[in-house]
Amino acid sequence: MKLISWLSLVFLILAAFTWGYEVYIATLNWHYELLSGGELWAKIHINSLVGFQALVEKYTWQWLWWEFLFPILTLPAWTLPLILGISALMIRFKIRLDLSKRH
Image 1 (cartoon, rainbow, N blue to C red):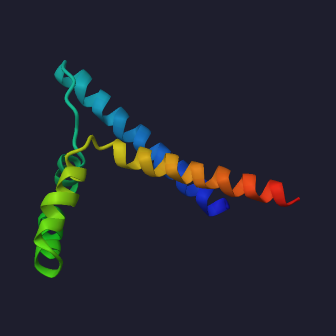
Image 2 (cartoon, rainbow, N blue to C red):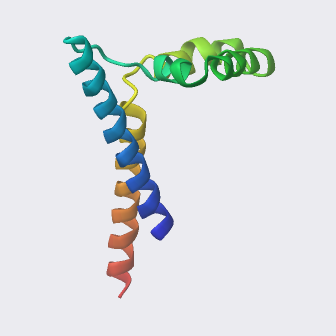
């Protein structure tokens, strides 16, 4: 249960920092633009993004990239860690509730 708690905390902090980065860039440019996950990944290391796309398209189904992964990468960068963090919190509370019902 501690692992799930730490994972949820890490994902929620990552989501907050990513959103904070968007706000920071917005204050520098004087207008707010959503930063997509793919755009953030490209800013960090573009070759790994291109390599991952080639890996997925070559060794799995080509539609997997365009129909599943690409739409996820076009979401705002903070949404994926936020969803993962909230999901981990929900799992943690579900486990905690189940454990309290047993005693």
